[in-house]
Length: 532
Image 1 (cartoon, rainbow, N blue to C red):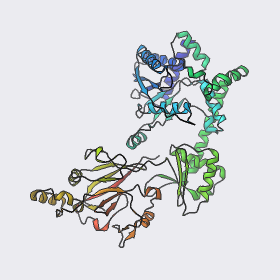
Image 2: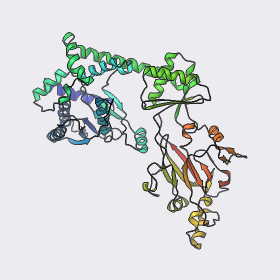
Image 3: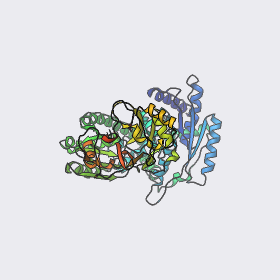
Image 4: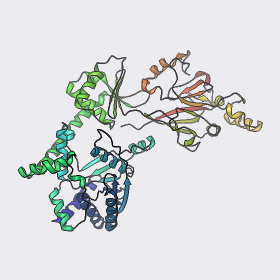
């Protein structure tokens, strides 16, 4: 029986890898607790390597040390020894859980575990987990307890895309992952019962870890596993099998609903004129039935990979979002989610981090700017690099990835000669002449010139004259003309010098700072985060 199950698992794993088009370039990672289920899957992976010599997958076992048990160190040592026994790579990750009042230890341990794994996966990598049929039944019962719909009742799939983002990742790392091949999560044991696994492990005499917390019924899964499911199985022995069938049917129905919803949602989607993030048309949503309003708002939120609010919260949010005045600036806050409305557009986003600059390339260093600074003074070294045609990249916080400063000789741009004055005072006459020649304009040294700065936040009453306007106007009115939502206005980089605005990134160049003819100048380009 044991060898039959292992052979079946090898065939299932092979089929799943073929299904997702995996190749030897895709690294296989097993979430390895050392418990009975993952021990059998580790054994299966070792056998899989032996039976697939022509497809030399790199296989690693990753064990997450939660620090919750006094036996945690011994478990980690056991897992390392077993990995060596199987001839598989072993990776140990220790996590620091954020525990406190009203924090679920189960949920926090899971978050810490998946976050640790997130730091290991590269685009296209594959995470294997040892979830089985009885785990599926537990998941389905928990979904029922939470009042979830078809999506929740679909429970776990055998092959699913995996969106793993580490809490500590930079925005650049997030963008790199979003633009690259997705990771996958495979569950080759999902059709296997706990009884089959127990029999196979006993027959193979595999040593495994018994986590003492598995018998603690204060945790929901343990309560179901210890108290509820044995009673259900005594009455209905095949309930795990039939429940898995129900989950598969729910998944099928959800897939059909998603397809129809995507077609209905598409005409309502747009982009913010300034930031480029996805927005939802509130006027178009309002004419639909309440059921479709709720469904499409859910789908819109999930498109951004954001957590859904509870059903009652969603209904309340819809009422406020759709009934608000057109000039209202509405913000609704939920756990891990902000819903905002500006004009006729609905925005869904994660809570915004503090706005800050961070240098990303070799022209300067990260130490040049404080960790949460909203001001960055351009150094002599950076000005020299810009004048020589090198670009300067400055990291930003959401919704932008970075700001790029580049030299150009056409289009709206800040005259380079205007921002170079601080550099002039330190140059000799020949150097000054050479720089003037390279710039194509005569520059005069000034002892009183102040280095240009990148700043965030300027009073709405500040009067500007954009390069494309004949008359000046207050900044607050220009924000509205540019379509910049109020919550982004203190996050847009501004180039200033001596307290005078030179350019608003992604918006305009101040007319008095505009380069003329073919005179070289600096262009400020906002690069947005990748969006779906």
